[in-house]
Length: 322
Image (cartoon, rainbow, N blue to C red):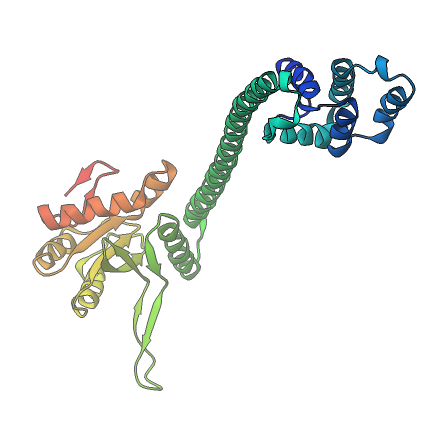
């Protein structure tokens, strides 16, 4: 039974009327309470009264007093009150009642069953609402934690990206740029492989180095990053384009701190006949993370412009188009 802590008034009244009719004799009434686990100390005064002054033992009065006391005890008598309800609602053999009490006993038991069913339904509804509330709280807490971590990681990548502009050592700056951009790719849900170094035969040294490889829309793109003060000419971009052409299914993404020369841009436009080549400015990444824009959407927009408009240097975030 899910009616807890106290019998409500309407249920208490029904039990007070029902028990004297369900228990044929005065002794049966005490046995009923005893069988439900009621403390012997509560029953003792009534047991003594039954033995010493049987006529003064009135079943309705005794039932009322015992049920009221159990109700007032509260949580400590929860088990006993549940057992009393269980026994009443499961009562089946009304032939053990006085003949004149049988119809009334059936009626009271039916009302108690109905009331308990309604109370249980409301209790279950309340419990379900409470369960749903707790689930919502857990989910909201989880979302808040995810958002907090997302903001922390965004701030960390932004700070590391901005810190690059203060690094004077070109080598350190280059390695740090690779690291922070690859973190940014991963953070944006873009599959990325860190820098790859290909070596020839033993003793021949490094023959090719790739800053990273990302996957967008199922397509692999070789990534190259350059941080130079001067505008990148065609010779600076050509080596990466060659690497892309040496791989059958790959596209290429070039990221530069400085601008690209018209000749370099034109070479990449020509290459678009056979390969997807996308030119990026580092400031686009700075702009995107500073405004918490979706990096994958930015790159996909640039890829679409390269494919559809034959424009390798489309800058949607910066409002620039070559």
